[in-house]
Image 1 (cartoon, rainbow over the protein chains, first blue to last red):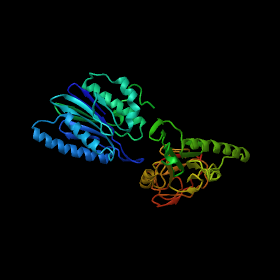
Image 2 (image 1 turned 90 degrees about the horizontal axis):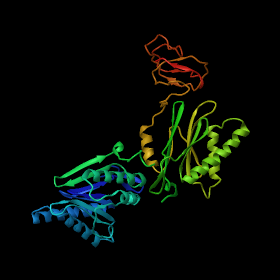
Image 3 (image 1 turned 135 degrees about the horizontal axis):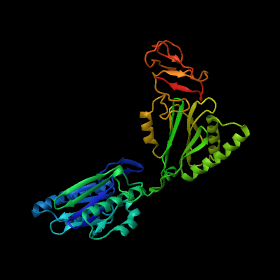
Image 4 (image 1 turned 120 degrees about the vertical axis):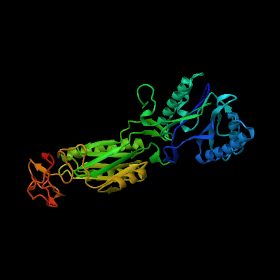
Length: 200
Length: 228
């Protein structure tokens, strides 16, 4: 998931990759940089999303050199959308593009399966997202600070990871601002449960 | 998706020196969704007999309940506690009765013989084929992962961490003073080295430095004091 705040974005993801019921990787890094201040959160087929992200990263690097300035987050999202829409029948990819650019600050764009492009104040994806829509709608407030966003993302991911068997492992967070990208990992006892321990 | 993987779950039992251990996870799910984390998969069937079941949750409960019913009647008629081997046959019979419309549950049994306290473990498949092993048994949705761990970590004659009615079992090389009534047990061999190289081992009176000796281990309930 990803959340905008004034000055940047906070993005987060779980770390589980499964092949059937087997957890192939329990410490996956699903937060993929496509440029210095633009990341994407990948869900769906790992192969599809890695391939598309690699292609977009190349296109963005080239574009950034031509432009002689950091690329816009909207541009990165549009590049994702063009691949995801053109190959919509073949791909299984749900992608959230989030980052910071000098023109419009922190932005979150969602490119779900099918190839729609939409800017949102916050976005969630993946199989575990179904379980937390209620929590998100009840808890989100516009105008949250960076640390409030980090806590919001961590709590939401923790709740999804408890309920969804395809989600789990550690929580990887990244805060992207003009200054740069600050990455953190929440594992084991660091996971936030709100008041009174895990829900079940 | 396999019906045995619908709710998920795993059970595992191991055999050690004078003891057995059984363990299970507690997640109850419906496919990918976790519904609760306090589900019971291990059911006591006697003072020293435990049954663990993995598979479809409804059948785990049904098999445990129906088995307990049959076991209660057995104990009333026989007037004694059932042996683990006999209980295994009882489980096998219950499952095979449903050969062509089976319970989707795969049990593991761990227990001690009520008289001799010999440890016993076994597992059965969903239609009741029994398998007795001397090391470990397991069943569940992560059976391959458990086989890997058990095959690597299991070794013979592991002792209970928490001690038991035998008192502290210590480790090989320790010496023991037997203070209770004696009677030959398994004729196990221990390497006796003594705590402070006494002239005689206090338990069997064999000279210190003897490599192996048969220990009169007595019977369960005897008192042992660990002196080395």
